[in-house]
Image (tube, rainbow, N blue to C red; front, side):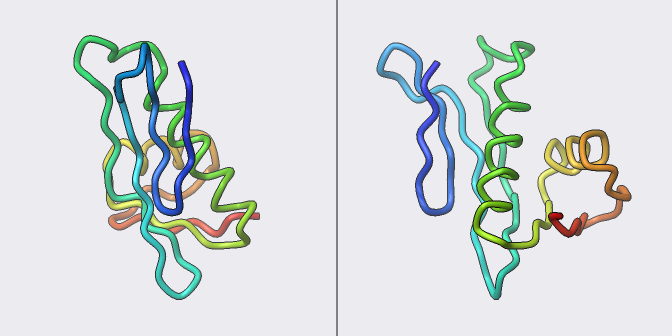
Length: 94
């Protein structure tokens, strides 16, 4: 699995085919994780978790704050970063 980072998205490629993505547009230093997708045949393999983890690390590297409107990203942040589960979830990156 190869993961490619672009300005506002990270996507997963397997055998030359895009199989998943996470998008995180930015405004005023706040990055909103608003979409996480993994191809149906690859679900349950941890790809979505890896995509969100990479997005959060990229946002952290950029010095931004993360907000999640995507339900998967909200749960990931609550479980892995100790953020309070609200909608939309806002979690300062430390």
